[in-house]
Image (cartoon, rainbow, N blue to C red; front, side):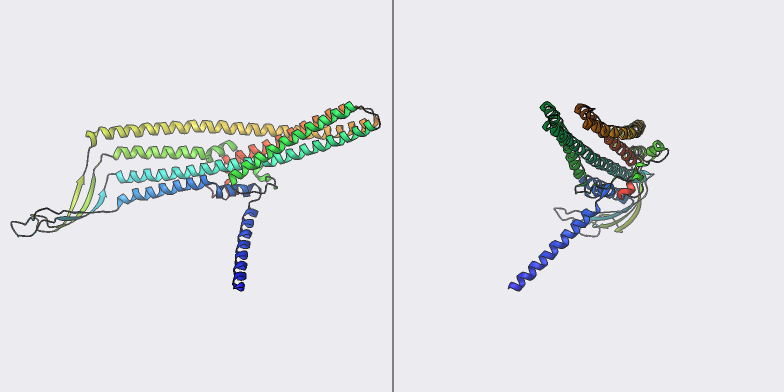
Length: 425
């Protein structure tokens, strides 16, 4: 009995260990911005929901395509009183018809029904691509924010450390009666402000991390920096983005659906010719129970006014879809030009701030030496440290914004598709 329990426990422990190893291996693969993008596409429920919509459209299109296949129908009746033929005396109280009908010519009506169904499938696929790219852009932005806020936390910690060193130096001078207690209290106040800034930046980092996990639905290692290849944008960026933009692809597919709807509305009143085969049972006045015929079927709903209304509706829908595509193209171009302009501005700010920070760092070291020798006041050093932290924080923010704008442009041009494992559209 004890041996069986031990074996069961060992098997359970091995299973838990294997499951934990698989989970760790899965999480280990989600590293860097590429891992975050793949995790979002793999785990986000919106992707699965939109994929289900695509599958539903495909099944609906399969149903529309079945109009080309034969239709089998059966009709059976039972009369309350017996009925016999006056000629043959055969019992006719249970007549039945088994009918097979094959459309042989519909004047394009079935073809355009199928065209509308196929266009709707393509539209859902384009909408799936749009959703994926929106999630990729949001994930890349969240990843860049986590990286940027992490750097901001490092800068804020360095600022706190610098104020702690200055406070300690002032306290030593107070003990040596070279400074007053007022100087120490003011230095302590500056240190409290620096710690408050650190707490604020830490809070922003936690929010950014929560936003990233909400998209990826799994922890992601954000230690790796964004690869430089994702920050280098192609030439003719605007034209490339307009050609590959997912929003424009959705609008184009909606226009294709509207075009197919117009063609279907034009053929809605045309007849259909069938080849029909009937198997008859207990039908009166028939010599042969098997019949083959050609059937011409047509209908005019509402004396044609219903079809006229549907044609007008389809034509207006196509006009609206065309104008919607043009408006979306204008909006997409405007947004892209804005991103390009902001990215260029951040690049210029980074270049200007880099040299200024180097000079300011050297100036701080000089002020500290002059303060130690008594030629500079502690307030000058404190003010210069505050200036250095402000410019350093702005420098980190400019670099973060530059990365964010670059990744957003990559997402809108399809540059993140391959990184996330999506096939080329």
